Length: 252
Image (cartoon, rainbow, N blue to C red; front, side, top):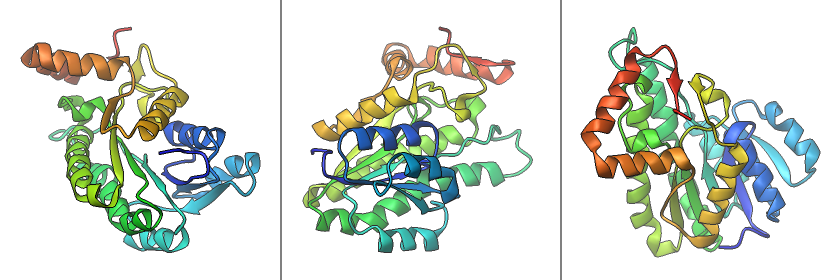
């Protein structure tokens, strides 16, 4: 689909990859971008840069009431970018309780699913459109050091496949972006090479234009997929060694 003239909604659009998506969509000619964030004031800088085109929106994807309010207010959306994510830095057994794992699953899996359910009828009315789920190479290979984050991204990837099938009849394209290490606040604990958020967003926009199902957005994601194909057990062992590492490194 063409991005020029479209209306998009980006969850977690106030910073990081989400902010890069907002800027990229506007540069590509989107008529309006709803910039969704738990605190809409955190997106005021984008609204100031593009008055009337970048519109802050209060939205916590774990809150059904706020998702319903967003769907009622944003009936013009033709592109949904499910970008909001949570990584709480707790391992599955090392965490004091299940709260971190539950929150990561709520934000990273149930949040995008709830958004897709709420906005599927809107996308249908607007010609089909597209949904992009920002996932992770941690959804290709289990990363023990990431605790509940990695399992939630596995679930998110599976959901994208299921949604793609369910929404094909209304001509809604569903793209899963497999993202490696990116220079954002979430990856502050990672040393080594990190991709620019704007490059990830550019890859995502290209995927929308081309109607792609799943895209590895950067070299780390590509290398993880290649390692899985070449020697999955060796990759599993390397992921396990991160549990005892003082810092996580991309190796580049």
